[in-house]
Each structure stands twice: as C-alpha cells, then as structure tokens.
Length: 254
Image (cartoon, rainbow, N blue to C red; front, top):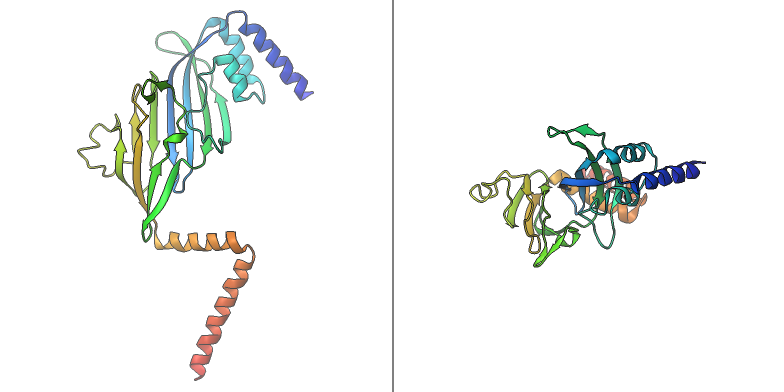
C-alpha cells in the first residue's frame, strides 16, 4: 500500500510538472565540517525560488514520504546535488529536508532545501611527530562545476570549511575570501574559512596539523587494540593487572 501511495504522489508531481512548474536555485551554501579523523560532515543549503505554478507541486512533494535525491532532482533540477563526494565510497547518513515556502523581501516565493551527509577520506593524515598529525585535504572529493582550467565555484555558491578544534593551518590555496585578514594573522586562531562564487578549485590546497593529548593517545591505543583483539582485549588487560599485583606482592615479601 505504501508503494502504491508513493507511485500516486510521483504521478501527481509529474502531472503538475508538465503543466509549467519551474524552480530557480538562487544560492547554495556548502559547509564541510572536518572531523578529527579523515571523514567530514557536509551540510548544503539550497535557496530555491518557486513560481506560483510550482507551489502545489512543491508542497505535495514536501508532504510525500521516502522521496529520494533523484526524485527531488526530477522536480527541482539536476543542480540539486552533492558537491562533496568520495568517488570510491560515496556518502553515508544522507538526509534531505525541504523547508517551508516563505515570501522574500522582494515578494518571491522561496524555500530552503537542506541536504546533509557524511563523507569518508576527505583528508589524509600523517603522524609527523609524537601526537602531532598533519592533515591534507583531498580535492578529489569536489563535485563542483568545471571551467576551462578545472573545477570552479559556480555563481552564487559559498564553500565553507570548519576545522577541528586546536588546529594549526600550515598552508591554504587559494586564500579564503573570509576571513579576509587570514594572511596577516598568520593563520592563527582560524577555525572557519569561506570561499565565494567564481573561486578556482583546480589547485585547491589545505594542510593543517592537530595535536593529540596523552589521554587521547591512550584511548586510541586501547581502541586499536580492541579492534584487533576484540573481547580478548579485556582478558589481556586483566592478566596485565594481575601480573602487576603479583609482582608487587612478591617484591614486598622479599
């Protein structure tokens, strides 16, 4: 029954679409929050202007269940897409939320369509010193438009990177549009950077370092041990503790 209901909704949407419904994406914000490992959380906001002929279709689609990204691309257009994607592993935890229709200050009907997802291997990591890790952004995850010299931010697109806490930026190119004084500040205390429309991305570079605490190092060690030994990790820890207690007892007895 649910499948029949979804088919009925899609047929009704198609019927409205061929009657003159149209949409215009006026702005896109792609925010990439880099995790302490190599993955990232991506949140993209599409501001869409909706014509009067499209309102009924959009509202029907918004109330429908289980519509996929492909379904929404059929409605709004192929420009509604994921701009950060690993070509080998794809994305995970994908969610799409079409916001309500509102009236802008210019009198246009518009809505924000939000998509969010996680991506693996957005950065590569090398340990360059004890508890010091160097991260390099993997520009192969970009899925923006291609210009003559390579990928470039399309018009009305803002690309933002949110760095992990306690990050030290080593190199970045091109220099972000915000903060505008990044170079004069020598990359100090910067955790958010943004590039605006028309910025070239073909030679994008971002290198930064993170520092791991001793507690974090110990935690990582036991996590790695558990991943390798499984339940026997606890047995090994118990044996080590018992050995230490026995050793201490024998030393005292002597």
